[in-house]
Length: 428
Image (cartoon, rainbow, N blue to C red; front, side, top):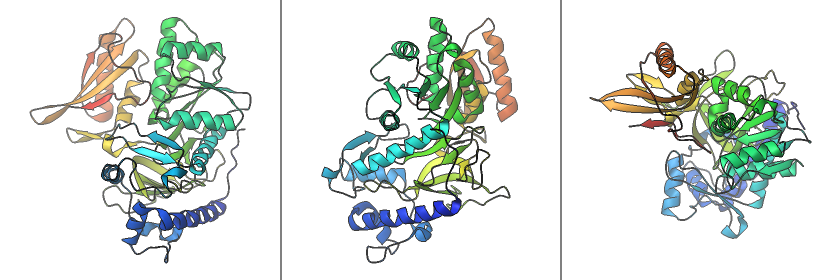
């Protein structure tokens, strides 16, 4: 099932242009949300645009979609077909604001599953693998797409919905699952629980972990920790409810490829909104903008993801010719905080914390004292020298980020544990 073959850049461009033409015809004929946006820049059914015109299309912003759904409840106007055509409803997590409802037709749902199949293929999932999906049933799209795509590939899929963490761990081990699909945070939570219960995870059948929901598996020390505690290879994946499953890890360091047969990618300077310059290594650094090509029922054109990336348009050492993100998603624009004039990204802090295997959980708060922002880190520590670990972490953050945080030791088990997206970073 694993393959590193990909179409040439010329073939990608041809197929993108064809898919875009088909998508635009549907949008201009039936979608009120985008007909209005496109009409504002001179495009209509009588004068359709091509992929070469994409840069003239206004960006789509998340708050536009949220406001549209509020003004036209319950689903908004970004629907290309009558409501009777739609068969799936999922919702965003609401991590960065009000949750959005997102509908799919059978055709766009199949497109979703085909994107997830690429995640499995790139990760090296085999026909004889048993895949344990450690998400709960509910409106979160990640469980459903991972599970149903695996079924279509003929994999033995094991559902973890409706179980406690202890039950999930026991079931995973008893059924001899070989692949774990979860958030990176939850993989570490299960490993913590395994240690408490006396299970030897590296001796289990699990050989591969695939992660979604948050960018932790592309953070070097998070990835290293997951691989150590599970004794398995760790692979990242990126997607979003409103966008689709757009990125997959290839196994070369923390590179993450854009599925360019299903998405058109751009990188912009988030300040000027102009295309980010390309350096001599064919890399663009900035905010990722995506257009999905196979989701005509609820499409997105030039969607500003808020993800900060280093995108390389050139051959990856894995053999694929498609564009890839060096180091995966680096962080989010809305996740960055400024502390004493220094830009701090949660992923950078997590990378530093995960250098210390004795730290089992942590929480970061940005507090304000006399108009000055201060960084406070609470940590749970195993071992005999928690104070020494706290001091070492403080020194490491100071050396790396030029900030001297307050590091406090929390009582064992007192910090929150997370099943889906972690919320360890708080701004007071």
